[in-house]
Image 1 (cartoon, rainbow, N blue to C red):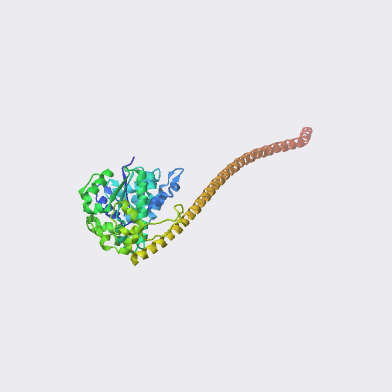
Image 2 (image 1 turned 90 degrees about the horizontal axis):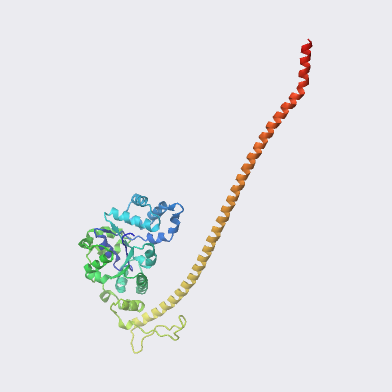
Length: 419
């Protein structure tokens, strides 16, 4: 069994880059920039399996061609040499060899991965790498939404930010419950920013890594970390040590945005024990029929006895529209799922037909080969027969000539004796 393979995951803008910087400053651990290709290439891992072994050449070419790998700063020759030396037997072993090459290039003995989006792929990664352990860093979703608001990319508005944050966090926590405490650890970004040492000690114990004070010197490599990111403009604060309250939804978030966010993800905020900013935003949702899932669902209305301002009423209208959109999306998702299942069945059917055709073709080739060998044997036999006939014909001709010339030979001999 290999050493622990740590994966740092979480929703975007939740502090994964800060945690990566801290762990990468450890004298034994190397954490490359976000990879993304581990899951992408895992979907086609079976294509690397050949009858004569794992196709290292195809794997390394796909890795080198991936746009994220270029930010690792690992020369392609080093990647090829590492794979040749390791001679991996399967896809996970090839990935380990690649990360090992990166760690060796950094002068370190262990490696880890930091790709936030892998929070949605924990089941696949845990199956590929039995030694994998996942550190899920969680940040208050309202601060996440504020962080996205300063960027030119990401979710469009607080509702979309709330949906994304809620979806990613819930996926990670559900996968973590399935894995258990031995392979999954949740940490709070707020705790890490306020007092990083206890959090880092807990993470190091979880990863079977000795705690080191050098982790706090990550600011020495801040420019390198920022430059390796795909969006460097969003990580300028890595130049600072961990600081609490750089973004605070209590001070910087508009009331309307706060209401929208908590209407979407308020229950998850409660589950994570975050303070609620707008208690009245927890509105009663009435149903005319408990069994109705789509058509019987009533729109969001104000709780009885609560006076609502115009902003909140506008937010409620927007939430009703959003719920209708959500129902449409759910219907389309189910429809797409059926289409996908049908496509997969058709693909499997085509694959089976292709395999059957290949087997039939192979049998036909074998039959043709047997016929060819039989024809060759028959041709050789005919050639031998013809040579025998030619020899027999030559001897018969010679005998006939001998018999025909014998009387004349005898006559010449008698005349010679007479003379």
